[in-house]
Image 1: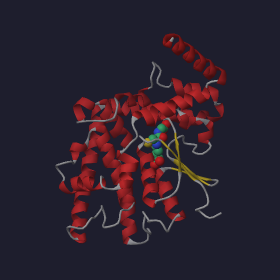
Image 2: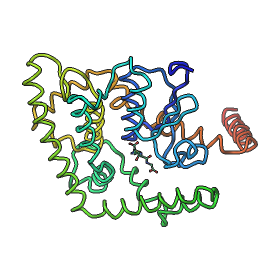
Image 3: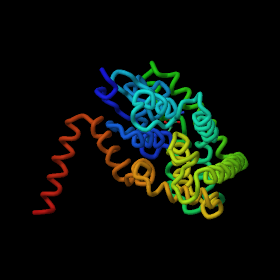
Image 4: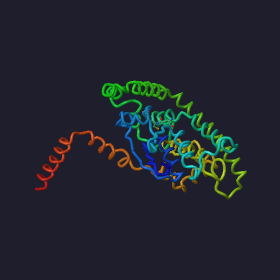
Length: 314
Ligand SMILES: N[C@@H](CCC(=O)N[C@@H](CS)C(=O)NCC(=O)O)C(=O)O
């Protein structure tokens, strides 16, 4: 079957950094696809059916016909190969232009975005301005009860086949918890971010000199490449966690780049115009919880609500 006849499905969460990368990739390539939201708070990404698609239990992942691909980097490369006629985001890596795009992708990938995100939320007062991220996001790292590992331990009992996956999650979040509790580590990571932003500003100066002023240009020239996909999502994350002041206003070319991104529909669809918390989290969460309830419980709930409503109405 040709690439175009196979159904492409993206498994993602609209607030996830790496999911946004894949969403922007698909939008930039103009592909037809289906979306499947996973509620990370409900640990839907750790249910067996999803682990059979991505054994790491992370979003994003795609399925394309019978084939599945996880990891935002691999998803981009896969889609570029499968759909070469739609705008190519990663030019051939044997060419200087292709190597440059790849270098910038690696460079941006080197940042520890989890430490930056959760560290900024944890030390919000000291480090951020106008943050949008709710402090409840810290529940991911800290858990919601006394035992931060409780939900993983429950999953381990329920699905012993995937014990190893859940053990890895416990270790991952424990390590992140320790790192973000250490203020100096978080500040160190943000300093690495500052160095990267300086380098990006220099690259934009170079690109501007080569492209001629007045014309629209992106990080490496007139084309919007994979490097821009990575950079766009990073800048949007800085806005979300309240670190925009690390470049906005102080780095003129990056500020202009950020403003220019807001004219780009694909970016608005994948990043900024995040659905409200009600439609992106609350409603899918309620539907998902209801699906898990026995039909009799739902039926009883509906009848009880109708009776109470009827009583007060009368
Ligand atoms: N290298 C992966 C990283 C994916 C990743 O870390 N995803 C996060 C969301 S942004 C996730 O699924 N976290 C939930 C978890 O690890 O339990 C990629 O590029 O896709």
